[in-house]
Each structure stands twice: as structure tokens, then as C-alpha cells.
Length: 293
Image (cartoon, rainbow, N blue to C red):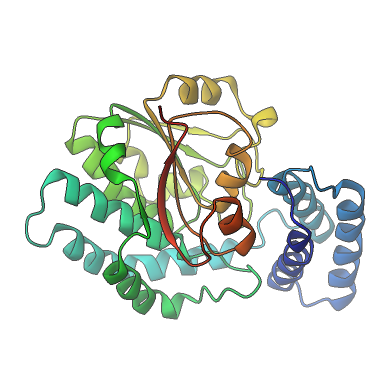
């Protein structure tokens, strides 16, 4: 996805948000914003990939703050909020002993709803205390774009590219169904802390590796998956996969620039630019299969 002019002020809003998470030193916050504005000015271009520019800006932010994980406390709060809702989600997914197709759809829906957690997006309230009511509302509404029936026949060898903390706990429902249906899963997480994204730290903390066949990383702390920074192991896994599942907007922003496929984008359209790029409306719960013959 190319950069939209609206990405500029949204990105800088997030820089301000995470700077305040890191420090209450207004001079340092001002310096951080000034430095990040310089990076934006240098790299902004209508043909630039949005997440690539965001990566450069966030790396500069972390450098000036001297903080490699401003969201460390926030991520723990997200995980705690998710753990509270997990039993309710499990009950809704397995209610009435659904067949495999319905079970997969419900698990995907729960996973997509958990993409709700994304702190610092301008105009989007992702407070943990509102998650339970938001989950119930979205679950009743269902998927606005539902390609799960097509995905069902592609689960033999899945590369699953994770997004946020908290959300990953709901992704495990999808893992369970894929394994039940005989599929193999390679889970991909960030190579280092960036925003609220999942890293190997959360994989170990919640023993997520026991739910999948293999865990690898994107190779760096980039926003999304920057192919130029991706390890060969990841590129080969994506090339050989029967299905790539891409969670969240940042992964869409980067991977939509390439022709990997079949690829299923599973996300909430929390940003009007992403929604427009996908040809959808803002606020949609999406499981959209692309690059599929």
C-alpha cells in the first residue's frame, strides 16, 4: 500500500502517543517529534510504501527516546484484558458443536475481532476496558468480508503472520482448528519490539510454540514485513505455503506490494486509508482471500 497524505499526521500522532508512554519530559518529547518530522520530510513520497516510512519514523523515535519498547507496559495490559475474554470467546466459537466450516469461520472471526487492540491510532479508541463489549458486538455482527469457505481447502501448509499482543491469544483458536483439520502452521512474529506487535518474548511467555509446528521471525523490528529485511527462511516458507494468513493492517500495507499468494488478509479496517485501498469501508471485520486462482 502506497502512502496517503493522511498517513503523515496519523503517524506523527502515534509518535506523540508513544513518546508520552515513554517519558513525561516535554523537551524530550518535543525533540523526538522534531527528529521524526525530519525523517518524514526526507522519506515521504506518494509512491513510498506507508509501513516502510513508518518503520523509519518509529526507529528514529525509539532512538531519540532511548527506549527500545515504549509499549512494554501497554502490551502486558492488552494480554491481561485478552485473557479475561478468552473463556467467553471459546464458548461462542464452540457453541452448538459446529461443523468444521462453521468452526473455522467462528475462530477466524474471534481472531479478527482481537485485531481491535491497536493503541495510538488517531481517532480509534482501543481501551482494554472496552474490549469485552466490543468483542460481543462484533461477534454478533459476524464477518463483513468472509472468504473462510475458500480458505478452508488451503490449510495444508499455512504461514501465519502475527500482529499484536493480546490478539495472538485469539489467533490460537485458529491454530487449533487448522491442526484439527490436519494442517501445518509456521508462525511468524516480529524480530524485535515495535508498537504492540508480538515477538518471541510473548511466544515463550504463553507457550504459543506448542500450538504450531514452527516459529520464525520477520528478521527485524520493521512495521509489517519488509521483504528487503526478511530472512531467506521466511521468504521460502511464504513461497511454499498453501496459504499465507496475514493479520492486521501493517502486514497488509507491506505484503500488498508483492504477489505472494494465496494470501488471506484478516483484520479490522480501523484506518480509512487501508479500507479504501482494500475497496472496503472503515470498521469492517475482514477475512479476504487474494492472489488465489
